[in-house]
Image (cartoon, rainbow, N blue to C red; front, top):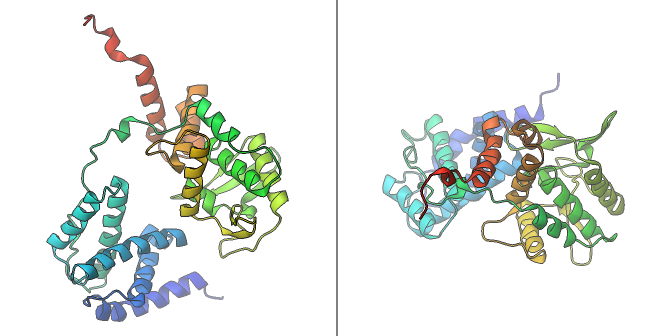
Amino acid sequence: MAQNPKTSQSANYEAALPAIIAEILPSVVETPDLIEQAAGWFALDVANGDARPDTIATYICHLNHWLTWCRVNHIDPGHPSTAAIKGFRQELVQSDAAHATISLKLTTIRRFYDGAVSRGLLESNPVKDIKAPRKRTADDEIIKCLTAGETERLFEAIPHDHKLKNLRDRAITALMTLEGLRRIEICRSNVEDIEETESGIRILVHGKGKDGYIYPREDTVTCIQNYLIQRGPVQSDKDGEPIFVSLGKSGKLGGRITRIGLSKWMDIMLMKAGISKKGRACHALRHTCGALLYQATRDVKVVQETLRHSTIAMAAKYSHVLERGKARYTQQIPVRP
């Protein structure tokens, strides 16, 4: 039986990493070799050895930030002190980095040193007890979503014509706002994921933790089909034929749309619709789907299944916040100012 290429590659990485990293880790240098080997570690250790390539790329980006910081501040990345880690964290805080960003960066370098410890290159992880600062905002109390009126304005900002860019933008907006897809799920979507069933179209979605199916409404399907017909086939990459690709100013087709590209696109779309606000980004469209769906159904289970939440507690956030805002509980206090 032929050996699985993925398994073979992982085995080769595992065999080569200890000796190479033993030489590189103690050095106060930032080298392509270290980045390459770190990618091998992450591929073996993150998500139980089944991390997606874009996840590994994100980890490498954050690790590179740490290594660059070490080089600039003359810190030995092979044996950083607790004070050095806290200094890095403090710089992130002072730069007004988002809480989630700080948390992810610390998680990344923690995983990196976990890999060093597990391979016998370090005795202990210097990031083990370093946590991200507490959130001081009321973000957990607020669902950053669009109202029904704002959602309509977003769609109205996309011209109804047969220009490829507008067809693409309408399909992306429909999938995110009406079907609840995440930014990364838009980027990972492939033409092969669209399946015809007896009950209609279903789409395989490559999610954060696991894959799942969505059963989009007919007008969403029409938006996708109109876009794909106008676009035609494109070059497949290692993951398949991407549904959504970047478009040059002249309309030239590029490669698979990236998360950064999608975020920039969203900023432009929100400004174009006149509904741009601080903190509003791609994920606001997913929240919009959940909020509007709960308003329409008052069924948390429906929200959970549509957004593919692992637990109903996550979906219940929409009901809690919306019902609390509507109820105005303190109105029941029998005292008047």
